[in-house]
Amino acid sequence: MTHAPRGSEDRDPTWGSLEVWVERYGAVRYRLTVLPPGIDAGTRRWVRAWHVWCGVGLLIAAAAALAMTLLLPPAAAFATAGCLYLAGWFVIRRGAGDARRLTRRLVGVDLGRYATERERERCGRLLRAAATLDEADRAARAGAITPVDRELVWARVHEEVGRLVAADRSRRA
Picture: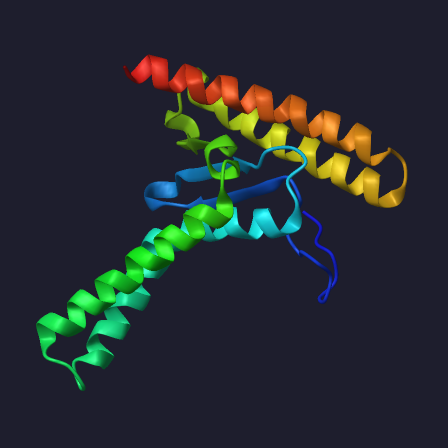
């Protein structure tokens, strides 16, 4: 995937992200995040912060609590750190607004030769969706398509990923 040079307004793709990592025994996990079409750069940053706040916020709160134990009794230090964590959560939640609810996330796991046909198809859809969005971004930057056409592609893929997420939820219920 391509990124804009350092110093631009946002280095990540405008549509979201595709994360790929290898797990035990050679399994490959994919996580596709598709942001709502038309999201501005500021809201995009808030949504990304929302997705990492649970882990990063806890680390920050724990470090703050440990540092504050030098000045405050332990109970007060941990209560203050907890309040700081919640305050950060509320600020980020408000900044992300409705875009956090409209963001679509889909996870697929490729188990190699042990994967079922359904799992292979799911991973293939994830990769095709990310490639489609990345190609639309690249074509828009090159001037081959208009920004409106890029957003139409983005909206179509966002809707398709939303259907896949809804199908997963109904299958689990």
